[in-house]
Image 1 (cartoon, each protein chain N blue to C red):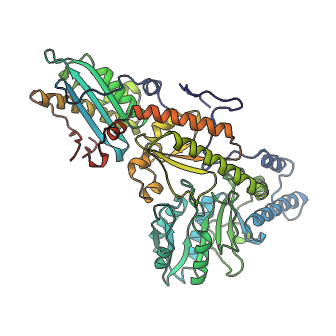
Image 2: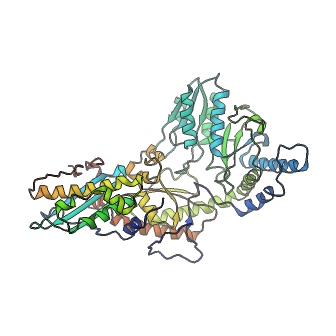
Image 3: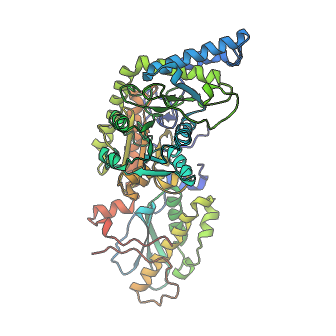
Length: 143
Length: 420
């Protein structure tokens, strides 16, 4: 399969790889996908409590090159946006930017879910009314 | 070939040319000696082997008969037992459908296993539509069938057992001789898809009680588009109904003008394998073990899929936990191997062979198949191992699963959200 230059670029030089303290009040964590499906994305945002601006974002992804590229791009796009602005990012925007083929659309859906899940987590932690609840529930470490 | 830029910390040793081909279960490069022998049959010696009344036909027929002898010699058959086809898929179809039709009066039950090639499984599915009963046996964790399962599966309506000699993904060798013995004791015909095995490991249709056997040229350094079906003539005499009707070539079992250059190539490929197999299989097993030891010596949580003991000498199939196969292939894009990951398949399902071993879907997504071949070198193996180790480490740094596992989280205890 031929990858677009942008996918290759994100795969080769992924942006914002890493982890934040998931217990921090300012951090929202989204963990979506499942190992059995071959895709798991963890996306974290650090939000300024006053301005609600996402000041930093990090990701780690288990998945194909397109999944890695989608989440890398997602971290780039959410940075500098307010949480409400970030919620307007649609998977179709990611598909267009990365020229994803139809079989890889689920990667972009997962990236959108990861953004929503991270924001949902932050809102829950900070008691913000969750008017735009993540449509994919976040995976939780069981007991 | 379009080249993608690769950022690699591994230097390319002298004498190693990129990209490296290490996917020899998919196909093999043709041996130059095979090509050389084929060439005249495209031009000067172009005759139709069925032309009985002039020299062009006789020359072609002589070449075909020499090829038949070479194939027969490699597998312990006689020349009249070799039927030429377009390849192993056709041979599988002819064997299974041909027996099903010919022995319909005797019974309608066929036994196979879940790890067979699609050419066998899908043929079985089609026969089910026509009223045949097909048993798809499970395999054990190491990829082998349980002979007791086979005994239990047989009944008085069983006409055919079809089980592969060597698996195309995990290289696991089924106990063909034991299966053949059991089948003959029960008066059931035994077909084996030996596409990956012939030319790689010793096969003897007499000693192994094989009644029908599929052979392919392009898996043993011969050309694509040609193969053969061995059909036993004695003890018992096996008959198959043709699936292609026409001029009555190949003793009526497979009509169609013979692909003379291809057949010459198949014959030469068999002759070379016959001569070189002892040394070649040792050399390939050495390279395979070197690759395995290097990988397993440098990386944790790496798992071999299938039995190491009952395995083709040139096969390695490994799962790299917490790393998805397609992203791994993308990282080693100067190396040609394949993956059991869903993302690399047309169906978006992970390898059904690995699933049948009880390998979890997560590990199936993380698997890489290496097929080492005649033209691979030790320097190539070392380069492949180094690149792979580098990329797996990089992707694990990127993997949330690796991070969670290192934090001591049991990934099985996590309630993963279904895809949104």
